[in-house]
Length: 56
Image (cartoon, rainbow, N blue to C red; front, top):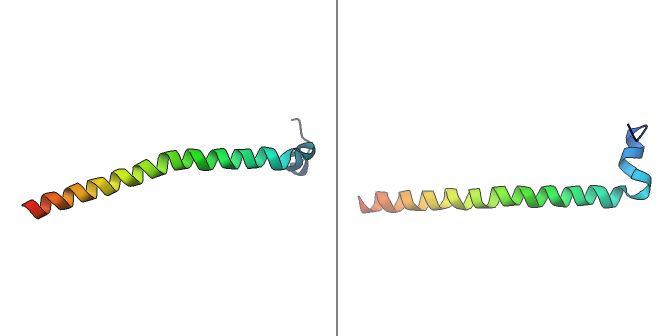
């Protein structure tokens, strides 16, 4: 392994804050790409079902 302990892995020779923040931002964006459309989809389904029950 390149790093001998977890502290070195966290610091990454001074580049740690940049690297870990880049990972965090990427994870947040990817999660949003999945969660937001799924939430809108469920809301639309709920709205459509409500309209169908109101018309019946």
